[in-house]
Length: 338
Ligand SMILES: [Zn+2]
Ligand SMILES: [Zn+2]
Image (cartoon, rainbow, N blue to C red; front, side):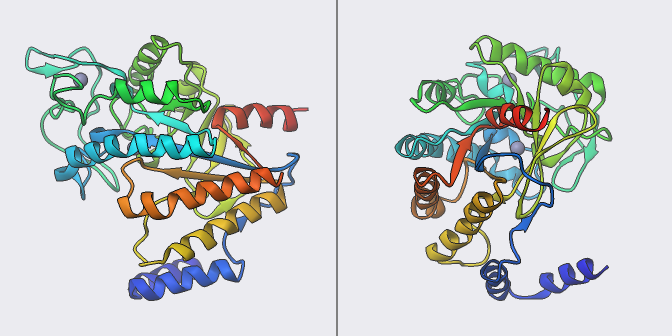
């Protein structure tokens, strides 16, 4: 009740004042929230995961559907920049990749793209609305050179060829809503199966999942296909991951890395980020950062490199380690399953 009131109260404040309040919540150490479970890790752990999705993520977005291709192209521009930053500081990331991005090309058959694939029925959730036409209606049925917002085999090459040991994870084949409400087990199986097939062609074993738009569900399907972990949406949380009832490791998220609405200075972003690293190292817990590669250009150029530099500095001081979701899952099994 109090929480709800507080949230409504924050909503009516102007952005700049909200920004000040949020900043002070960090300064006063009210944020981030620290999990209560006792750690068995030896050090703080930083995990970074990315929703690698291009135009697929935005085509049914209530706010951004008209910008789907633009967002896809922005992501295409940003990925090489991000990869260079990760190389500079040797930071491995879990790239939760939409399966369709693995394709060099695809075709329209009998008026439909991927005519053999299962489709969701019409649905609406908090962020998306699919209420007309075919689920694959935006698919250009083309190739990555002609329609670079819809395919990304060349970018996956770059991730795989990076000297940094990145992980490729899963973000479904066509960016579906995975909740039990909007996704049957048949659809979940078809989507995950297709991702497994395209990933296997590159000798990639998919183990880590990021549910599109935080649409958690169909855990059994993930388990069946050999997945071991997923990102669990949370807010400013630093703690210990946990095994859910299906045996998958839920890794709570801590902070999304992108420009906020608060008109913060670079310094404010850096200081708040530092709170997460301090909390992770002090409590030997996990700080799980995530980002969309289509992130704001100003943030990517002026803030993001400083954050990664700081991660590297904390690691050099032996205060934290950096792990992919898969590596964290292995560490968790080692530390907690005895
Ligand atoms: Zn296609
Ligand atoms: Zn997504």
